[in-house]
Amino acid sequence: MSATQPEQSTATAAQGASPLFPFVLQLADTSLILAHRLSEWCGHGPVLEQDLALANISLDLLGEARSYYQYAAELEGKGRTEDDLAYLRSAVEYRNPLLVEQPNGDFAHTIVRQFLFDNFHYQLLKGLKDGPDARLASIAEKSLKEAAYHLKWSSEWIIRLGDGTDESRKRLDKAIATLWRFAGELTTPTATESQLQELGLVPDYVALWPAIQAHTAHVLAEATVPEPPAPVAQLGGKTGRHSEHLGYLLAELQYLQRTYPGLTW
Amino acid sequence: MNQQEWPLWEVFIRSKQGLDHKHVGSLHAADAAMAMQNARDVYTRRLEGVSIWVVESKHIHASNPDEAAEFFDPAADKVYRHPTFYDVPDSIKHM
Image: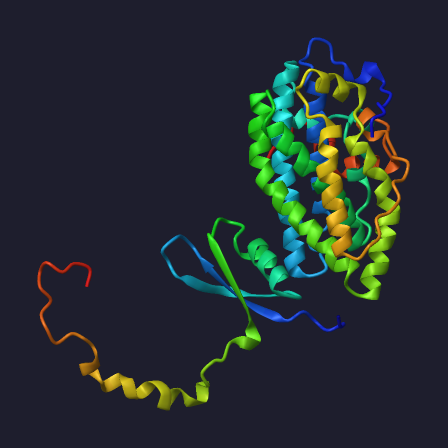
């Protein structure tokens, strides 16, 4: 977890912008991409109640993403708006970790992806809430209540799927085997994140790790699932090296603004 | 666990402190914990409540509509059961 990710410095080090800009943009991209993935479930959920739960979480994350994009636009100070940042950047400019762009797969895949994200997200927001940047702290404070519920929801489902039927267990095991390798990127700082951590602007991920690990162990034990061996972390998304999935996702997400620039409701 | 459909639950929401819980609808869930989460997601998305009760529908026993006549009609002409045959003093409010 302590290794630092290599970074293409030209892409992220925006000249003259606040050092926080690339990090806030990364938070925005992460929430937006996961919100979009979850929105793909709308109308397709396994039962009506969970269809609504997925849509609720998607909208929570979308709201959080907007707060970050608005702040990022101000930090950059080049006249770009939240919409410009969300709709008019290409895949290589996106800074979300690989985990959140992974396809929904079956319900178990969606739950494992959500659990890995929520567990990190909750601890990160707790750290940001007490951080020195007032704007980030206020966004984190608002989002923390939502994230607490998301984590409760996805943890419950890990337990239910793991300790449920043979079928649900088989699917959960498969989802864990596919997605666990993407968790490491969340807590592996990029060069940008390391700098901000040294400045005290971003929580030290090493300090977040014990709480994340303890919750994982607790939930997996309840689910009767043996803890998977820590795989080699798949890195890249936070430095712009994405899987092919992101391109397709953005094509759909950005279609309207790309086709009809400046279109409004 | 079995392959059957999840049981039905009735949901009651208290819209604010001091008011009663009111029946708002029903949903499906595997157990009470899931029913509670589902109720939160289905029925309180627009700030409808501050407290939720869920009860499995099978535990609610309803009066039989066929017996409505003998159950309820006899009360219709018992006007003396309403406390309306005395004067309320002016100083008593909210009666």
